[in-house]
Image (cartoon, rainbow, N blue to C red):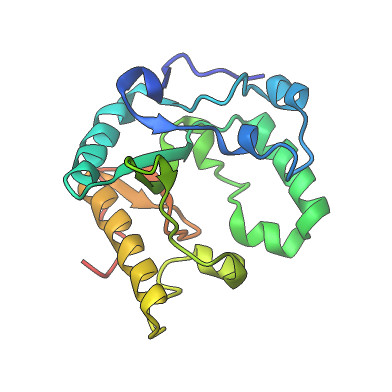
Amino acid sequence: MELLSDLIYIDDYGLLGKNFYWRRREVYNVTEEELKTAGILNDRVQVHVDIIEPLKVADKKFQERGMRIFIQEGWRPEALYRLIKDKRTTKEGKDEIDKLFNFVDMPHALGRSVYICPWDPIKDAQIYTRKGEDGNDALFVDFYKDKHDALSGQYQELQVLMINTMISCGFRLGTKREYFHFDYRPDEPENYGNR
C-alpha cells in the first residue's frame, strides 16, 4: 500500500467532505477491510497539502453564494483504483467504466484531484446537479446545455458555477471532462469554454 507523505485530512482545515467509496461500500460491494487494505482507513477525505489553500478559496467563493463545497473524493491510492475497477467493471461493464475512469494516469493517486458537489449548509445536504435517471451521460460537461426545461437549466447553471469557481482557483477539469472532477494544475491553460 503506497502512502504519500504530504497528505492531509480536509476536515482539519474546515472543509466538508466524506470519502465516496467509504460511504458507498454496499453499492459497489466493497468491504471496509478491502478499503483499509487499499489505503482508505475511514470516511475522511485526504488531499495533497498543496491544494488545501486553493480548496479553501473555492469554498469561500461558494459561501458567498450561500453554499459550501463538499469534497466527495480526494486522494485515491493506486490499490483503490484497481479494486474499484474490478468491482465496478463486474457491476457496470468494462465499456461504461472506461468512460468514467482514467486508469492510465490515475490522477487521484497524486492527491491533487477532487470530486466536488455543492452543499446546502442550512439543510446540511447535497445540492443535486443532475437527474439520476439521466444516467452516466449526465456526469459530463454540458449535458444539460441544450435542454430547455427549468430543472435542466438549474443543473447546467450549478455545473458551470462549479467549473468556473474551481478554474478560478487553479483547478482544471479532469481528462474525462466530468463536471465535478478537478485536477490542481494552475500552470496549465483553462480547459472549459463557457466563462
